[in-house]
Image (cartoon, rainbow, N blue to C red):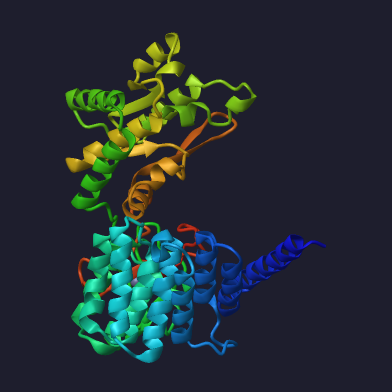
Length: 464
Ligand SMILES: [Zn+2]
């Protein structure tokens, strides 16, 4: 075996061990191995990021390493790479933020909070997307070190970075303020939580959770109820739940996001203008928008040669009329709207043809949002849950709230009976009672799916 070959084998061995250490979350070993890789050749930004993430994940139960020790290892690793921190992306920075925050909590030293902030502002300067998880570490050090004023400001700070805090961060803030601050400060946090979140996890609804402790401390025992009555009444406290719609700001934000994100080219902007003018010229606001392609292709399998069924679209229009919708518009792609069938459809409702080479979803979404600005309600009829990347570019909390209140799903039976599933009279959404602002209800989700469960956490006293 030649010298060169031998060296390569040793390098490969180190590299393999490095990847193993990373996979096991053994950060200190990973950094050690990074050093030997460093002496052999350049360490790559990806390897640096992996080592930092492993350090951040390193379990302190079976590690002799302190977080302060982990932080100095992290700094050492960063120095091994040309350019240092400048090669890092979000995962690397977030790992550094996490390690710094944990070291600060361990050392009980508030200067680490400044270090965390310095890292976050470096992310801002480098135009790196700051994430919920980045902020989660900031929240944990602020609460851990009892930096009360900063805890109170962190939600606003995150919003300025367009970050909505995760539930764990909210929970941490509520727990901290419950123990250390006025009741008022927690109500303010809950109000912010309610605008960004529509449900709570099972952990957050458990007895002993931050929520439970706050309400109990101020005289309201919390209670899990399995189901809300059809008319929206909570069986425990008898309070009637509301239909929670978007705020004016959320409506404006969603509309401008649709305008800015979807209609980019000159041609697209012109098409949008065309739609806006068309909507303005209608004698009244539309109240139901039908996603023509979704209804027309329902059960048709276009991939197997199925064709758009105008009969199904007609059934949908009739079902909307039967449910008292007066201003129904079907959106259809221009390429599908040829022949006498469109003319026939036009006899019973309005039809808007969307231009070629553009996604018809953008158009019906815009048409359904615009009436909200004038305070009138417009629904979309579609079985599309809008999980598409297109919709993911919209602010999640507002989009999900809109979808829950405005999306009508449907089914078609074997005998062509068209059934609408109109949203219930109350929202499955965090609710503050109008009659008593200290009484709240939180829908509980199971796992990730928002609508997987029917249970609620009732934080209200039963009527006597
Ligand atoms: Zn209740």
